[in-house]
Length: 127
Image (cartoon, rainbow, N blue to C red; front, side, top):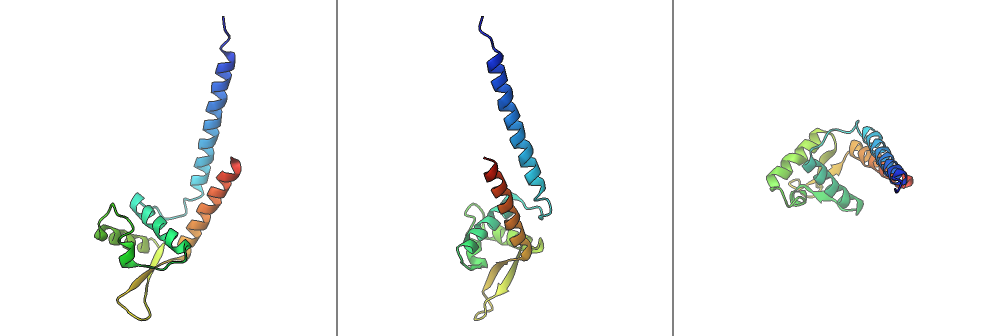
């Protein structure tokens, strides 16, 4: 009869590793709790804006309304207003044309991105 002890031990180690990874994720997620709660669409929009900002681009409100192709421009604009109310973005007038509004990250958004970077770096170091 073949012993199942090595297989059982391997399964337990795999489960323990998964549990440790899950607990690490929970701890890291708790670190982000001081950030305003965003729905999935707000998060997608903010991530799209972050990509533009990271590339050194300014983003006009009208351009941002085309960032999320799965949503109507009206819905995106509503979510942009929600992000502004949550303190993550602000709108700034164009100096030459007051009809043009730019979306600008706030200090709170920059803190959110910095915290995300810390979490990602922490996870990357564990691997």
